[in-house]
Length: 416
Image (cartoon, rainbow, N blue to C red; front, side, top):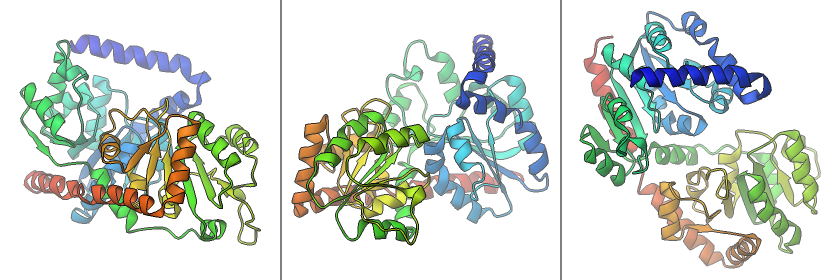
């Protein structure tokens, strides 16, 4: 089976080579990987042991960040190596202060795995959430390097739990331990005879609570809002904006709107601002001396969204119509109502908060308008809805210390 798997990995690499000249993201995916081994040779200090953390993309990185920070405090003499699969994660975090070195993960071929592990020589490997790479797991096991999967979540439709999933089950069994988000995942692993797991919860709850305690002052945003009610719509896609923009254009309420599109390419920003009939400002063009006599702010910069939610009375989180729901915990931690589109199945926290009525779903322009108007007009309802979200998050923190207890045991008993 490894023969077939390796054949398809090489085939994928060849297709990436063919397509890369025509697609910027794939071009970054390919070109970034050409420098991995030379980067490891140049920047890793052979005198200091390495802790390797692998994240697929930006969301998984944020999930692993509480562990990175805890490991840096507990093991200051170790180097933190972070690898990404996706360009969207690497390009944003390649200069991250939390890691000593950030690179792409080379393709999962046997030769790449052996070379990567020889150069990195990690004392421990930590994979986040979904990352199951059979060749890397095989080589880690051969080299007696402990490997742990954290904040993992499984569903019955995944190959591990299907009749044809024997190869991937074999890969899954190579983890020394798996830390799981929910009881369903525990039951699924038990059903295939995997018992080396702990129900720890999701480190993202720890991450958003940490953000709550580290709010960044944004004086330009405060001047824009001027103590008026505010709706912040984060990580929006065109499908989301088809609901939001008509509400903005037709609302007669004294409300400020902050839109943070997922796509901040100039063409999309231009089209979005043109579609809004009210006065609009771009965040990149704000200045300390500017007149803030506008009701809509379009944020065409990255890295601000988590802080912007702190200014909201209502938040809308995009992706729930077509592309995949974005992070609902980031606004929920501020104790405000959160609106999303109807496609949230598979997002555990969204499912649970929809059931609790802390997150409200909208399906079209009318339901969006009615829900926003109801929340803006009923302050008690707004507070009660937000409290559901804040309480839910407080009740789910604590995954990081559970996982750190195990990691410390591994690191303290293994040889440097």
